[in-house]
Image (cartoon, rainbow, N blue to C red):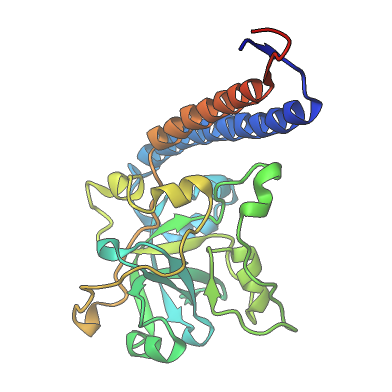
Length: 289
């Protein structure tokens, strides 16, 4: 029995809108691909600069936009009372845990800066458990300057992005965060903090530093989609001595090629959706044999 095309407004609209959404997602991943290429270029250029004292850089207003990825030396006093944690689905040895974010009062000034002191595996993230890792009141070390700018979802997909709870002086203390968000975090602090934060570095002269920051891993897909994924994963083989926590660990970002793969994937899905829409409108012709 022959088939012929019979137009259906409903089927056309549904498939068309779905395909448009997929095309937008494909374009977004292309934008992320270009952004990541620019990031790697800037990262490689910035990491060539010698580490500088944090206060020296902050006193130069012309360096504001270029502080991202700078290696700095810093010293100060930690404020463990206002410490928070940021959830990470994957961390050291591909295990689940949190990053410990502690305010530090910078020596020689009245300024505070948030410091990512490193990774703690699940089971050690409560406020009481973290006290055993707060024995170093003063910190003198090197850090990597980071901003809180992250991947931005298109407006149409914004509803997929998880949000931290509202904070403020009239709100309960929020100890667990989805991401480092300085603008929100400082709303529950009794003092202002710098608009950047530091990732603690155990070896600022690591020749593989760039590859440790931009690399593909099991958490790559979550970063690409700007989602956090499952809340709990297995967490075995993290029984190293207590004194080794928190483990200095960079918040990694996946390489440009992973975004390029999603460009083709979303584009293919858009074409497939249009094809399904056309097939769905092919009706059997009952007038003939």
